[in-house]
Amino acid sequence: MIPTAKDMRNRVSTPLPLAFWLKTLMPEAKRVLDPACGKGHLLAPWSYRIGYDPHVTCDIANEYYCEYFEMSDTHDVDLIVCNPPFVGMRPRAYPEVFMREIHDRYPETPTMMFWPLIMQMNQRSTSKRYRWLRDEIDIGGVVRLPSDIFPDVMVAVEILLINFPQMGTIFLPDDLL
Image (cartoon, rainbow, N blue to C red; front, side, top):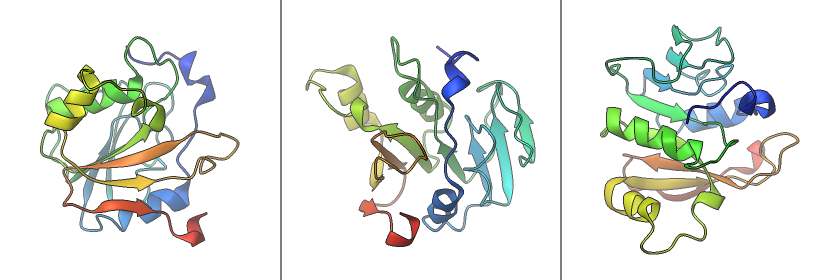
């Protein structure tokens, strides 16, 4: 289920201006975990960074681990940010795999989870994913991203704000577009 090096060849980094804007949604967070950190763009705004990634060395992390979720214990963190790989969506999509791992290990921790819109569409009311999101995940808000937010990639993505106070739907300000 974990992405291979072959899956990672189309890796896309989170734009730094977006990462710094996301910090405005939770400026008090000090210790931040990214379980799919890549080069660390999502971690950049925060002061203490814990990153995991087997395919790229994250030079900015205070703590870095070269496997996804290799920790046996959970870290004491204020926030989790995650823009997981979207490639290789079979049989369960990687964003769902990462969100389930995060939820199992950190059920109460605020999380900013990048989520492809295709995973929201065409779900039946009896779908396990639909029921899991509805019944177990506390989504306090959604950040709507334009499909061209990632350079040279057109993908419809939103950021789920999990375990946040009710924030509703948020659109990016014009200066980030």
